[in-house]
Image 1 (tube, one colour):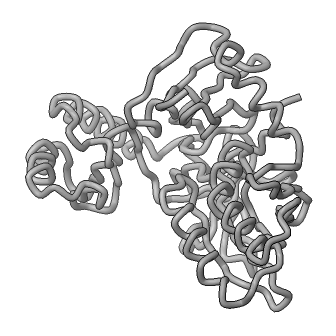
Image 2 (tube, one colour):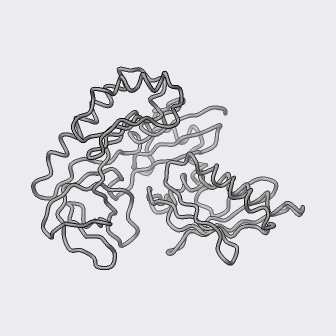
Image 3 (cartoon, helix red, strand yellow):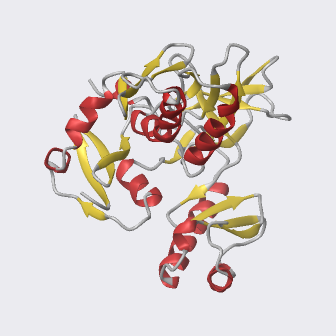
Length: 339
């Protein structure tokens, strides 16, 4: 099955969305119990944490931790936004750099100026979008026009910007008072509309996951082993401290078997991490290959993560020959959500 298909359905009583690309599960979103990233609170500053450069804040949904902050006094009220899901037993990560993100626009209070996605390269299109956005922001509020704006209807873009700008104004003027949840983060269906903006067939009929084979694809994510062709495979094994990736060449006994398996992992890894909702510290125990081939592996890995939505830092090689990454915990691991 060629092309892209977005399926909006429910799984185990939770709202969920699946993205199929050429018949393969390319992304999966499911509602978690914790507040979703993007949730905005009016919070109260609690106690600073010496040595960590941060402070705990009180929200209606429990404690949150704000990093790299200065000048806050205990008891002071402030606006914060959830940046990711918390690790087990830890507070929610939040920031004071609040963003109002939609399909076409990101409104940035405190960061004035209009910016356009670098993926939009056509100068005439950039000029058109600047005209659309020119009168939509105010004061020290800025605007980022996302790549989905390219060739989009001008009225749709302007309406989206106006809605986000109005929401931003209302929230930023509501900083006083008791701790309160002011804005909910996007649920999976809204997030799919926001982030999966490329042309696709949309399926909203109940039972879409079953009729399109999504349930079988999700069953495969419950196992640790992932095949990469030519007999090669790798294991994905989360631990409390890190995510371990172990690469094997399988039946391939050629001289280039190690390099082929490692390149296969580099190309497949972003999709596997997206679908399974995995992040944090990641260690790759790669198949044996010559040191001269490391550059080819790094190039393939960098290209694979270039358009991945989650922020991922490629940290490099360890003295023992492992490769390490650090990935933002933007989602709850799928194995923790599904029973």
